[in-house]
Image (cartoon, rainbow, N blue to C red):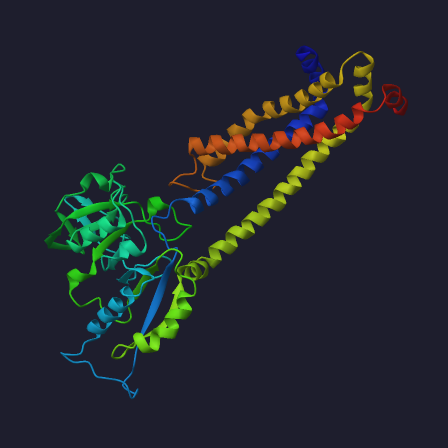
Length: 419
């Protein structure tokens, strides 16, 4: 049976050659599309290193001297004291789990500051994000350590004066993990070589947003309280985490209580936003781009599917007479069906090798998508090639299977008469 199949494929080499070329082009194009989609979706689904569910950002405002209720600040009435009192009152609300204050630190904020982090001869990337926060910040956003440290344990480390860094902060040194440096107390920050800090824990990599890879997101978390009163101002970020199941109408309830309970000196609550809305707003352009890409890829795949389906459908329909001859010669429906399917899959297998070679060349010359700092990753290449093969095989199976089954239901004499 196999020998006859190869002989028939050889006898029809002209039509099979054109079909093989079509399969080759389709295979390379589909691999490129699947590779692009793979990179976007895998990056999107990477662990973020934080959790914003049930979290809210509370904006604080200050009365101006034009307000009749304004009280000038002095040594006995300070803005930092009002901010601390605001945080304490929020902590006392039964639905609130944790409260924090920070500078350019919360997720999806679009504003950041960088820090210089050095250890001995090791120098972190200069675009390491500096997160100056109160200790409960890691509880609000549920940061976790690489050795299983809980948010509560990380918060306690910050209170003790330790610093926290993302595990990848020294990645450029042959992939050195910060976990191996936990407990060392010779870290220098902000270019100050006179003072040293102890590394309390290495954090699971904290991504800047959902479309940036974790491997290139570098973080330093520093206790704001070590700076004294400098961070406790109304223009800093006040974030809260609400207990699960208790944030129903949280914004409305807090706004209703804000005038009576949260007017502290000149300080008041100016706005409240959920991090679900902040995330959606911040990532709107990336989300739209991904959606447009998916729509474009879907449309292209549909055209490839219909084109390939039509080619094999038409090819199988043209062979009704051949199917009838096989049945007259005593071949069963299963044997005829298997022969037709084998021919299609053999052609696909034959073009897969040159298609993979073309894929490798494209990746080598960096013409496909970047991920993990490269365009050629063998596991990724293998997955995308396998996915391409399966999709094209499914198209071939449908394109051959449906018309073949219909053709086999026709009586041989009728099919031969039509021929």
